[in-house]
Amino acid sequence: MNIFVLNCGSSSLKFQIMQTDLEMIEKDQDKTIAKGLIERVGSQSLINFQVDGRSPIKLATPLRDHRAALLYAINWITNPETQIPGIESLQDVHAIGHRVVHGGERFKRSIRIDAAVISEIEDCIDLAPLHNPANLKGIYAARDVFGQTIPQVAIFDTSFHSTMDEVTYLYALPYQYYRRYKIRKYGFHGTSHRYVAYKYRKLAGIKKEECNIITLHLGNGASACAIKAGKSIDTSMGMTPIEGLMMGTRTGDLDPAVIELLAYKEGATLDEIFAILNKRSGLLGISGLTNDMRDLIEEEQEHSDRRATLAINMFCGRVRKYIGAYTAAMNGVDALCFTAGIGENSAEIRRRICNNMNWLGVELDDELNQQAFGGREMMISTPNSKVKIYVIPTNEELILARDTCRVVLNVQNPAN
Ligand code: ADP
Image (cartoon, rainbow, N blue to C red; front, side):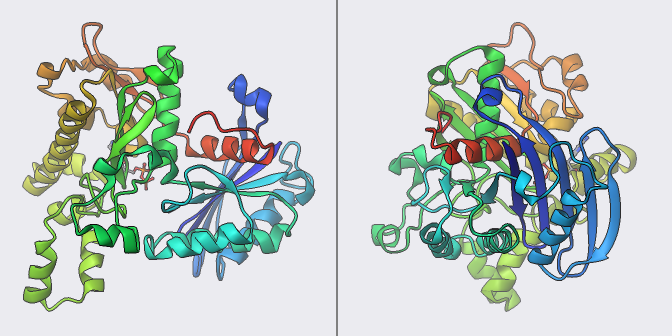
């Protein structure tokens, strides 16, 4: 089955065409045959398309909106000159899988999209005003471009965390706000945490019920997840992705009284304050330089920049705090699994996070740690380390494609 996996952000469109079916899933043989990224949708867009095994095509062209961007991608995919193996026309795409950020309490697993599902995703806009509208644009555009008959599936970032208990997901607000507005912790990056847990089980050769780990998705957005007996029991992001770890440009955990003080002192509106919390805080806000961890490490090493060091130390400190909290919540942990841009590539950040954690039984092997970057999947703890440490490059698209395949074939999803 050729699955078109689509991930629409507010001004970007990311896609992959993946070949998968139940046998390929079982044998772990599914593969990406083409992929693309269109950035700056709505102005002079930047295109990066690639057929597996060939060099990427990069160019710039104006694309008005998500529909125009999707049409542009489809024209490339079906152009005879592109020659994607097995794809000659739109009919060779058998299903579409959409990443949807917020599924609220309604969507505990991936689901086939119909009018009712679309309207329920629309209902979740209040909870994710930045993300769900972009995802919906992708769904509307795909309906227009591919037609009504092709199966389309929604895969939610929140679903994996639907196993959290109310003791964990409730905020200690008056209970009626949960009842009235569904204000609670939902968690995000679910497909990534789920993929990493799945991969860890395969590497460790254990069953789902035996999987007791903390997954650390450290990219520009960052979150930690406590996975006990294969299920998410807690995660650091909350009702929205702001909560939890310090991120590239987001604050993470913050006393809500700060919002009041900022409004009072700066005369800022709520929109302005939330722009500060979402876009000008985190690594960028503290360093005053950049949200890019690579550049911060360089600034620290080459110019001994004090605030670059401060930003890095705060970032690592928060991660350590969550590891401690989750270890307590889980009554012990078998492995820490690092993933995403920083987690997969930065030996220095992993070192600082795992430093001085012998009390917990965490012992990093410095040499192995240095070798883990650029997509390598490996264990980086010493043989004596009671808690194993892994680097597992994430692959959210694989989960999107597999879920799409299973939903279309009406097969119960075993991983969620
Ligand atoms: P997102 O998907 O959330 O936008 P990514 O998972 O792509 O983010 O991660 C981006 C982050 O990863 C950036 O801060 C980038 O600097 C960091 N990163 C990538 N490679 C390295 C590296 N070798 N060392 C340190 N940080 C890195």
